[in-house]
Image 1 (cartoon, one colour):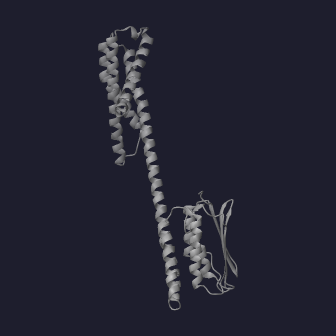
Image 2 (cartoon, one colour; image 1 turned 135 degrees about the vertical axis):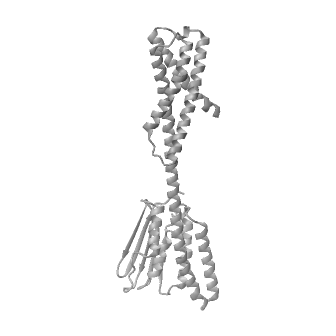
Image 3 (tube, helix red, strand yellow; image 1 turned 180 degrees about the horizontal axis):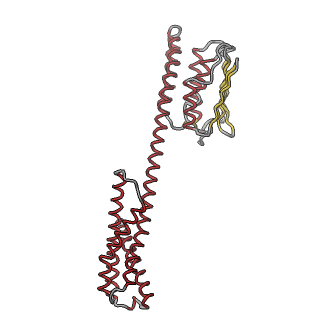
Length: 341
């Protein structure tokens, strides 16, 4: 295949130039080249193919020369490049093609000289322009892929940074729970550490790949069980999870920040309601917590700010996060477009 790619363009270019020249010449002179000696025609065909190879080789050398110039910072000038390629082709054709034509034909007329000077360079320029356009297209696609790869790597780097900020926040809250248990109930503290290990294992091994929503909801149940250990007995927790949410997929650890925020600010009547529902537009996740009148939460903070940014990166245009604060309640509603199972 490599041999074919190497010789086919030169052969095709040489034959196309030869037959075009012969047809134009026969039209002007009224002769028929197929009535000429076949040895002469074959010699001219072989010469034309050789010229085609020489022209393609010289065009390739010039292309590499201009590429080196561009790599050194010279601005690309396509018109200048084509002019030099055309000039080089004319000089090559006239210096070799015209003497050959004069020796193999009945002299060399002005018409012969004009045709030989114009036709081969014209075909070479067409071929060179086609090759150059493919080269520019491949280079543009390569640059686009490189930019997309760099953008993707930047997104992954930012997501890892956001996760790195999130982990210490979660770990501090969980260890704080175990700390208070140590003085009152050591077996319960050990059990809490086991739950914490399971939660951390989920965080470490389920990075930025979508998971089944049933795994995410089980993770939330474990987190709720861990948080209830350190919560006041006055806490009234209500959890409603739609059983239809099972095999659908979503990116992990996007729901937990809303629960963390709710446990951080719950107060007043100590009521906390969690619900997850499957709707036509995806997942509807809602967390509502009562608050003390003197401690109304603000819809901000590291956890929620990181959540907003992760949603922008993972669900651009496919999510809605609404936070509403009142003197007695704080509500967070998140809608996500679920991925198919």
